[in-house]
Image (cartoon, rainbow, N blue to C red; front, side):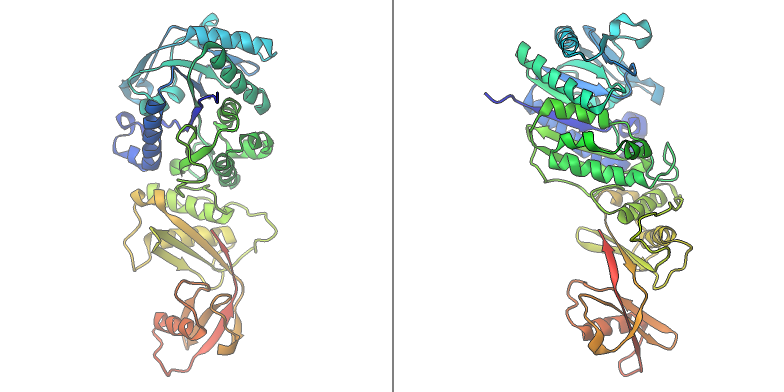
Length: 450
């Protein structure tokens, strides 16, 4: 008989809980919606025990700390919400069997109740925040354990041991991997800005969406360190527990400079569906992630992020760029520069992203409520060259039409623009050039990133 598997990747910012964040919690509306959906699936799955791994539980660098207490409790009082708490039964039988099975496998583990400084029985916010959405009434028994600084491969083995212990006891178990993604997506992020934070989040999201948890073990250690994350150890443990079960990313968003990924594994998961392009670092290119970080930081907190150094050899040092914003397949803002106006490509993208979000005269300024489902494209322009009508191809080249000081530009490969003449006509209208006035044409190629 196939083992019933259910797992959740759950972010844990306390501000997401309404009792802590109030109206600001709605900035994470995508995560709230996704965790609420996962909670409904958990209720349907109806496990005997929930196992949760939190990177904020008291831990030892070279061992896993297992909670063996019969009763567990905690609150978010340190975040200003003492009423937001949980009292729940533990599962000492499961915990003690897991300790024995880890010892048999040569994996260092300790009983948290034997070390007074670890405050046995007390739940941290890495447990309380996910549980406030997944099982707020404490319906199911809970086994809590910490991460360690042992290799990711060892965390995967711990997940396999949890599955084995569940089988021995005949327990139906759900595994919750508590953890956030990069903490370095914007200049005001908790750990400062690092352009590789968005790269890490994009890679992580793609791995989880593919259900290829083994690939977590192959992520470069330097990338993990640069991202300043706190979830990959929990995620690797979930991978060992879930085996080859399918997974589905429910949401990703990056407010406050931190990436929040929510996913379900096994029961209720539909692979490759439901991904929301909702924050810096979604499965998108580095330049798009940079534009998203710029928009999120400015719309949310009025901050212009620091421009990173882009070292990839394919990027020009400077270039004109256009940043296009769409919601529900409709344009929501587009601003760009024909030639570079800033000292670096990154600065050009950041400035145009912000302008597209708040200063496109065709639209009202973007609001924080619109960030979760925003699609972004970045076009990097090659230098323009003189052209005639016969030189144009609306699918390959953008066009610049000039009459004196008036200039109109149209990007290439736009839906509904099928001929060069149509391209010219639209560009003329944008510039206020009347039919019959003398014009000069230039064409340019673009590199489009999504």
